[in-house]
Structure formats: structure tokens, C-alpha cells
Image 1: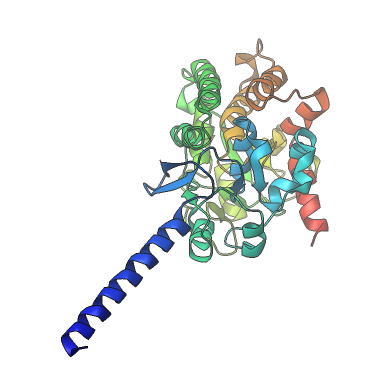
Image 2 (image 1 turned 120 degrees about the horizontal axis):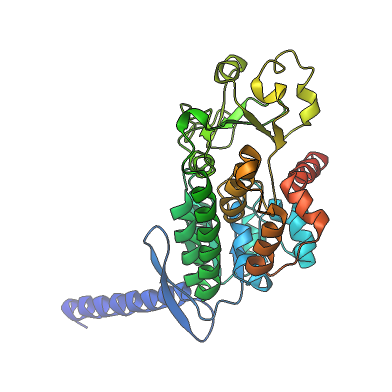
Length: 370
């Protein structure tokens, strides 16, 4: 064989090997199953997934509730540990205890456990999604997970999930209920002069000095209730210092200067403030306007589908009870879970949501787990 023929033969062999490798890679990238479809995630990435989707991994704290809103909870194959610890979820869906919980906190995923759960698709925020992309071949959809997400973002997100899971009607049911409640609340509070609007301070953590600033979703939620965010001037998104993004620590002096009319807490009891020399001179304490923040499937100091509906209604009703005398908030909460989650709450469960008992129970569980 001449040198020229040998070279051409070598080139042909290399070309064949290249084609074979490309074909193999394409097969690896295809979802398992007879059929597939192409979807576009919330970051604009396009990729193929199995059609229909039979197994779902939801890897964000607030995102687990969308499975119940859209009626696809039986397709869950992996969730967060936080969702597994939610007492309300365990009451709604006892099978949650048997699901893997490969995601503990943001950026902490047991990759091997996730792979073994064999999801057709995983949905996650930026940090967790990057881990899944880098370390697995699981089809991954990014979602927007900013602490600045407002009502418009909630609508966009639930419609995205409805598109992915082929449940657009359930998504639109949620949007309609959300719009109904927001419209009702804003109509009843829109004529309150700024000078007469109640000033609200969210005092989280045992110190009650961690809060959500004016650049977070909570700014809009408080405004929708016809109130003012005492911490509006505080910038917290992107600041960590040991705290969840969106939460920031402020001083007692700042709270005294703001002198809020309403204090919302997620630790301790309202009575703890009455004899506390640091807090007893604040107007909210003197007028006994101290409330535990509601919590349901997930805590309400994150931008969740639940809190978008319930929090503005709850806050407006306690800030301006005379404007909501004809509204039974517990009945509306029952209606929300019945129509949207397809779960009928009893009276005690409604009280546990509106008094923050579910969050206290969740935090106690986290503490006991170490």
C-alpha cells in the first residue's frame, strides 16, 4: 500500500470514528423513553425531555408546592429535605416520607441519590441546577429563584410549570384565584392615605432583627395589603453574611426609629415582647399588634405560591379589620387549598397556617435533626 493510500485510509477511519462518537453522544443526550418533546426553561435553554414526563425531581425549597398545585405529586421521585419535613405536606400527602431528599440546602445535593431516583426531569435554581448539569445527564430546567420575585413572576413561574408538566388548566386556576384575592384586597385598601397606612416590620430569627428589605418580594406583598414596609430602605438581595439571600440583619436602634405599627415574627411568642425593655416602647408592642407569620407547605419569608395569595389577605385583614368585616379569612384559606391544592383543610389546620404553627413545627424538626 502506498503512503498516499494509507493516509486516505487513516482519514476515513478517523471520520467514521468521529461519526460514531457523535451518534453515541446524541443517544446519551436523548431522554429515556419512546417519545420526547423539546421544552424551553425559564433561562431560555432548550432541551429534550421524555414525553410524557413520568418522574420529577424538584430541587428548590419553595418549588415543591407546585407539584400539589398542578396535581403531579404522584410523579415526584426526589424532593428537598425541607419539603419532607413540612407537617402540612405530610398531612396532605403521606407518601412524601418515602421519597428521596437529595437536596438539603442551596448548593448541597447528594448527586448519587438524585441519579438513583431516575428523574425524567429535574427543576432547580441557579446554584443547584449548575450542580445537576455538571455532574449528571439528567435533563435540567432552570427556574428563576430570586428573592425579588413578585406577583407577575409567580404567574410566569406557575405557567412555566404548567407548560412543562402539561397541566396548563391547573396553572390558570391558580392564576385566577391569585388575581381574585389580590383584586379584592387592593380594592378595599387603595383609598387609605399614605399617612394612615400601617407600618409593618418583619422581625425574623430569635433576635427579631433579621428582615426582608425593600428590594425583596415582601415589599410588594406589604404594599398590596395597603401597608408600608418599615424596612423599605434596607437592601438585602445578594447579601449573605451567613443569612439566606434576601434576608438582612439590622439594629435595634433602626427598629426603634421606625416604630412600626405591626410586628410580624417567626420565633417566640407575642407575650415575650411586653416586658422586654428593648421592645416595650415600640407602638406595635404597646398596642399588642404582634403576630406570628403564617406558614403552610413552606415558610412565608420566601416568595411562594401560597404566600402570594394568603399573606396580603391576612395582613390587610389584621391591619384594617373594619374594611374586612364581611370577609372570613379562614373560609377563603379553606377555599384556596380545596380548589387549588385539591385538599380540604380542617379548622385546626387553618389555624396552624394562619398562626404560623406549621413553621414553628418545621423549625423544631430541623433543630431536633441537628
